[in-house]
Image (cartoon, rainbow, N blue to C red; front, top):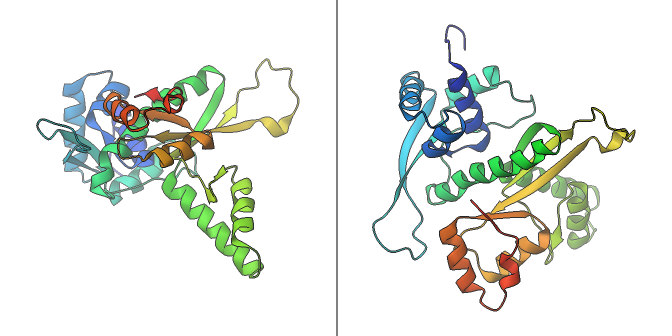
Length: 259
């Protein structure tokens, strides 16, 4: 933004919050500020004063939890903040950025996507992955629906199941139980070829799909996500509830990583 000078951490906040829509202050403190909470508080106050971010305290999901209702502090961008992030974040040009809260009841789940991403991104980067780009389910669903609509318009008589399978293949998404399975987020990346003997230029990019499970998932929903091959994550409390739900199917829990 013209005339606005931001610190590196403030730019990073706009970038991280913009591409994930909502991030907890706890996670920002850890990943952006190295747990320097006082500095984060000052920066967020400045960004709020400039009308770039919104900080809200929301109720955590209940899902049968006892005790007091937990409150979670989260950060989102304003439209002005999203515009600023587009200019100064340094993110890839095709990186989708978001502003504002959507579906307050799902804020806790949506904020956990960032935590899952950080764990997944660490593994990707250790294997030489670079230029990471995030595609949330909002974007993936929109692209899938547009592709289905275009296919139906091109061939009105084509079977819908056949169209969906073709679209799933087009976007490299799994087709399970007569439906296209869409992850909470897809991480796209490029391979670092320094020192590599490979010459196949067509294999320079890749992606990983991640899904954050909650206690609200039904056994059937959980099985579909497991069959889809997504990298699954869940908090310790959600894992405990899910384990009780799928007693007798413990194999489903074996590959779920803890947030």
